[in-house]
Image 1 (cartoon, rainbow, N blue to C red):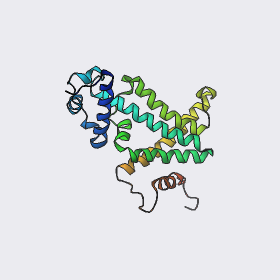
Image 2 (cartoon, rainbow, N blue to C red):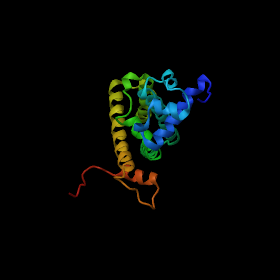
Image 3 (tube, rainbow, N blue to C red):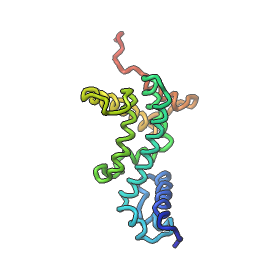
Image 4 (tube, rainbow, N blue to C red):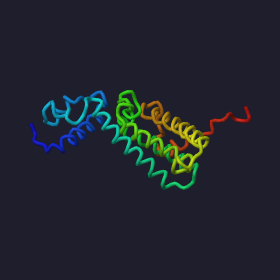
Length: 201
């Protein structure tokens, strides 16, 4: 058995879990397998995680944090309101394409229940808050009236739904961006499409 300091075991297990997730997806993860691959006792992972959901929650939290950081960076660097929303949508799809297994984990059925992991719920809420602030140009919820908050939520939900749909279609191979076009430009083009009925029909 390899010798790790107690404080290192959790990080070593998480690093190996990240590798397995990237290569195989959530179904490849188990604490017994992680113990075997990292050279610790089978009991060691249970001192840090409450089963498979525990390690998946930890990996999902880290993924949500990276996801939110990417969105926050875009939101902070694009001043024009409509352009900011469009660029956020492109960043959303970009994260999915670069991290398909992590994206499927944080938004899919394998994600542990949010009500059982408060830190995971907070990480998920924080990512959505970035979108909500971007579509309203309001940095703090406390500044909004109830009506404004409801409108902000609905607009963010609509923007999220559209970007999420495109992301899933791309990573599942249902949409293939043109070879001669950057992914970001392709996604921006889709997001810019006017979905209202043409007036000449």
